[in-house]
Image 1 (cartoon, one colour):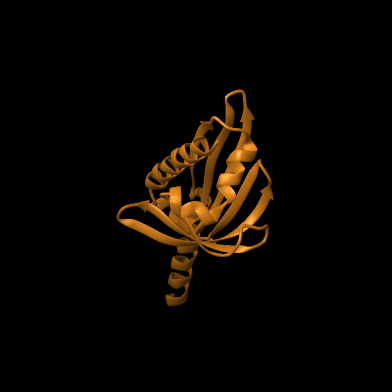
Image 2: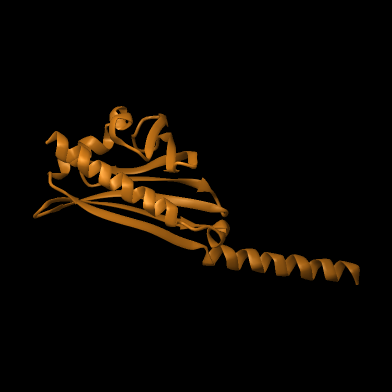
Length: 163
């Protein structure tokens, strides 16, 4: 009798965790058009040594942006929320895509992409990040989206002031 009650509780908890995992999906997205070609935008985006001069959101603390490398950023979400975020560089297509991912598997993971698209006005820069995991159900991504909006505006200002 006692063992069957424990088994039922375990099954119910597992079912809840599975449901939370599969329903835990959110994303943030911001795009901006920069009056410059993708090569110039890419140069600014990937020159992490200059981030201190213009980037209010991201600062590379460790590693080098190369496919397969582990990197760590200081992420300034707002004046009260600064975090260190480790990630792995998943894919690089020069002047088109920089894809990084990380997080805690099953709990909260992220798949972050900078996407550059050539347009008549210059380059459309898209920051898109997908989140998965149990913890996503209890987390509000809006402040991160606001930080990425600030980041895109800063990249635009930096690129257009240089070129």
